[in-house]
Length: 433
Image (cartoon, rainbow, N blue to C red; front, side, top):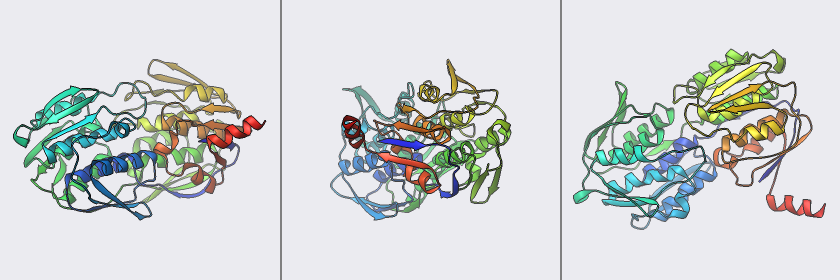
């Protein structure tokens, strides 16, 4: 998919962000924990979500779309203990089916996962936690085989050396079917984790935070439940940045308390914001970007500045006078957007794990390519919205639809001049020229 964008239009209006991708993927994996039907609402229509739904069907679940982002997931055929590699390798979160399958069947095999290329993200925290629960782990043929001796796992206290979201959720899911109390120390604190804990409690396995750790009261069997996926805080932040970079006026319906470090950064820059109980408004119609102030930011696990908003923030900072710096404290390789921003006229240098941005007066439309990361793709779209003239953002690997629900359509509804073009139609037009 390509995006043809004519920049210079201020965005105006209201947007309600969809359900959080990073919660929905985990909640779908949790459906493997029970034979009773579950219903999930506010599920975003994303490529990664469709991959996870296809994986559930391949493992034996029956997925029934109910419309408007709702799905009913019920038993279909008997659960399979082996996940198909062609699906797992498309999506990192697919690895989280390993623990639930192990807890249900006593054994499971899942190939090593794929997803964004953001530097090394080993699964050793997942494996170590499963071993603490009593699993016997063998890495073979590009995947992980897990067995429970006598088909029985045991509750445990698991101390994570790093507060990994994936490992925290994966181990909480598994512990929900291990009778007794499992404690996860140094867990991730992201709101998406709390959304999963609330769902596990609804399934009948009480899960909560207590004194800086997560406590899961595992049960031998879980029931069905209905749950609404929390709003996507990363999408909310991206749209607020889109409003700022186009000098527009937007109301973004979300949960502001999930965005605290990000909103603090925008306010430190001088971006005019107004917070409400159910959203945040950015009002930049009377703002000149030259009046904004540069900042220094370091991404950190929640409640620090979110790594997923690092690339789109860089797009805005490229038009802010002075020198800004963003240090990436989560992923080693999150700078795939830099070459594209430079092509648009930005001054962005990468030094180790730090981006150094020197603000320029304006950006200029050109053709750029999305590399490896859906948040990098969003950054290039935002920069193109502010650039003079026409840009084409080429997303050959369709990274943007992995993280943003109807991104171009939403921006168009807000006043952007953006058109989606299929790669086939684009090639035909170019060949005709």
